[in-house]
Amino acid sequence: QVQLVDSGGGLVRPGGSLRLSCVASGFNFSDSSMTWIRQSPGKGLESISFINRNGSIKSYADSVKGRFTISRDNTKNSLYLQINRLTAEDTALYYCVSGRARHDSWGQGTLVTVSS
Amino acid sequence: QSVLTQPPSVSAAPAQKVTISCSGSRSNIGNNFVSWYRQFPGTAPKLLIYDNNKRPSGIPDRFSASRSDTSATLGITGLQPGDEADYYCGTWDNSLNIGVFGGGTRLTVL
Image (cartoon, rainbow over the protein chains, first blue to last red):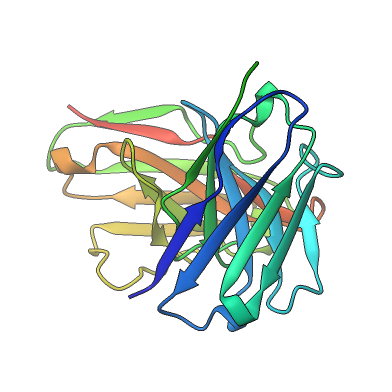
């Protein structure tokens, strides 16, 4: 069955960096565009970054532009999110999801906590 | 503040029907398909509706949806206590060039 496994989250100080990863299985990863979505504690969903099937098209929400970088390795069925210059407002559960705007499959989420 | 606008909460009695609205603009709902998601506490959201009104396999026909101009609506009939959850609408925004969501609607089954 389709599975997305997120990892890489943790506690980081303001200004710090993390690299989130997502490993996909059960579907043809290289045929699927992918998105990172985050959810702050008690809040709603926010799409923060999108990448197309071959990685040639990337987009970012204004809230993370210039600080976050999305990438993928289709040979490893993996999606990544490099997050830099973290602030408290970046504290959230980060989900790896399939698709551009129709999200059939979701990872379990990886928690990023920014605190001194 | 979310790009799409949903009511924060709705409620109805068991067996009744409820609708949840989602309002956007021409750059998002007006020119793109709408999806709906359900999220139970502590779990990842799940796709309920895609392409405005289509149900993935396994989603009962108690769930329906429609889109008109720059708004969308989710309908749930035959409400059950197990339908209590947060519901989100989502679509692509051509101006922002990223996906957008509503702020979510908490459904309470009285």
